[in-house]
Length: 498
View (spheres, rainbow, N blue to C red):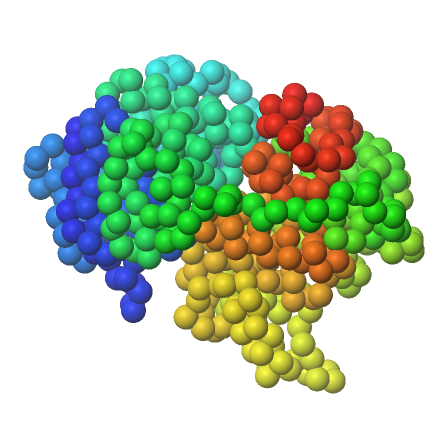
């Protein structure tokens, strides 16, 4: 089923979120929509799915007029949407989550359910898209990639002809992404029309037949993916040349070439919860220490223990030569340890608060016992300029920003305290290539200024491109250490992770 959109426009107040967007999703093909944060990608996909209505423009579905006023109406026309955020209800089983919109179809009298019939139907949907998940599995045992596949199965359960995925791989690791992309290939082979938004160009190149590029809400053009190079796509998305690469160059000196200064942080035989078991690491001034590992391997637990988010169950730490054992997150911030968590919406920001409030909340400027509004505004405006946050004003609500700009606000919150140690958990998750380059340059500049940085990421090119030294964790212990990142290949790191 071919879905055609012509000259779509959408305004939010003074913001022109989508401007003159035209694209065609062909039957049995995968079409990617790419662009920077705030370029209008999700807005476009949500208009196609009926989640929002365009202010102007037209759409046709297999030649017939198509103007859905809701997601439900789009579903009746055979168009289904999979959201970016995980929308699984963990109080329900896998089958109930797949048929959450059609539970009445499996209802008996007096409130009883046709559970065997529903389970068989749910298993058939999972099997049809090549997902090796049993509906009898406890839903808490599924990883994020498997949960996303359950959400795809939910969308497929309505027998759509067109499937739209809005940044559905944003929070997945490389194995989970592979699982989702395999499902897309399976659905494509079955003749579905597929549209998806992704910030990861490698996913676009691996899965998409066609792509549409947006910039600042403006339609740039539609292209055959095979005819485009990564640099061409980046240039059209961002408006600048990326031929020199995404990652800023490392300093010429290597760790072994300079006198060994005392470490900013020394961790000895530290254990945290069930994930981290007796790990010892050090990080020095001006160094970016990378942490690689599958989910649950211990990287996030190590950052949480250092930051004071989780108590140590063993071992000891020293910060600038002094014993350090934070009782809580506040103690970590008081010691000028800034933690950028992986989930900005739930852990890093209060999205209903303003950009200003979020930037200064870790260490609010004060004048005596009072909050210093003048200093707070001056500090926030300086951070907005330095980091390149796109916001109407410091008073704009965080939730009004694009994902990349919210990520920049979270980084600004960390830098606002003048940290001596910066802990980064997936710092460019859900961020487009242009914003990524900005964030990478800022991180490298802060390291050059002497800041100690620990970087954990599920993005392997990011780790290899940014880390000066890389520690690989597996099942809660250190599996290997790359003391130099010269000529390190992704497959070498993965070999020690698995």
